[in-house]
Length: 593
Image (cartoon, rainbow, N blue to C red; front, top):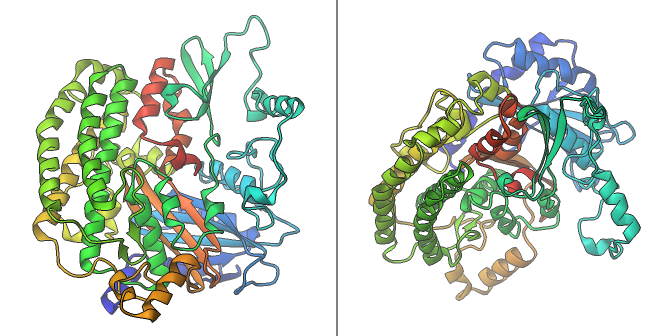
């Protein structure tokens, strides 16, 4: 990393916050933790954590109002850096839009006492995160309103992200499901209102309420999502999204893959976002290793990310039209998307999951005439997108189905950690490409579309305008792309300059070892986040100096957005529920990981 890059990275965050906390809590034991991402990080005792987090949100000047993430690290198997008595770390990540800065708060726990106070009374968005951390690590959050499993089945045994839990099915006995076990699993999924904190007020024949189970196979839920509705006639009184049916354990898989071989797994998180998934992960790895990505490689990355942003928004636009009763848009938008995939296939050899970005750059340079292909695609989309708008945002029927439906205020959006187009639809001009430029985004001229009402209609308007802005960025790359290398000349960049392996036996050995066994990466940790098509996507990597991530955390936007569904749906009709769900633009892999 050159000096200018280091200064730019250091300026991303406000370090004065640590001094402020020490002045405010002089009696509190507080130590700083240094990670390669230079994000301000403190470690405090569990008895002080809640008070400090409350102060950061409610009392400090320019507060940290957005609850960004919560996870844990099982430290017991670390090769390096293990501290006695610190068997687990609970990791809180807060974001301040006023400061354009983050803070990370770590709380150590002993394996014999893994309890900490819930902060759901301070940050409502912490609800699902605390449930996930209990589900995955067995860390108990005192006074949580409904501490139950969220990703694993309710009768699952163990906590999968603990180090003693097997990472492969081959480490377990062969699975056989008997009739008895089938009945047991089905019974565990039976809905009991009181277990979720709801009143059991449907037992009487005179009750005016009913419960309705929607999914997990209803097409309107966009995947294997179960939604439980409490209804008064057609009116929605409350909603419970029951996730986890799609859970594939991507974070556990990372612990048994080399830093390089985990890249294809990231493709499948937001499987409509393509290489945007790779980028967030690779930026974290490159912070960890101090790899400087060449200018041309950065421009190629931005080109591909923006093409996938357009493709993702086109898929959403077409399928959302279908959600609210319009058949035509899905055919038109998928036609334009196919043109993008033809280009992606010409560049990478694949379509949805190209697995093409690499540590330090990209797998290979752009092919000849790539710019002509991209220019034609942009021309076609700009020519036809007006027709999409006529069918959607300018349609009276569409407006009647979406305006005023599923709205949240800007304060509510910030409170629940909403990001991306859903946040910008509330009037906040916040885009990580502008506020915290990465991969050279500060070199491009583009606008950040916003709306004012924060409803299902405005979320549509914002995404349509974002397609226009992505095309602006792509055209600038076509006209001004730099020459040079497509991957860094760095010993930890993989696969490195392939041509050298045909001339130098040492380069060939290095290449073979890096791809097959993996290199040892520096001990430490790094977080990186990007403006993905659906919102902010972040990866937090912890390394103990080995060839694989010791812990990898994936923060996805859809997880937060689905948690807002009850708030957005209450008081609406059942038909409106599908309008609201579709407007959030999520995929289940992005929620369940």
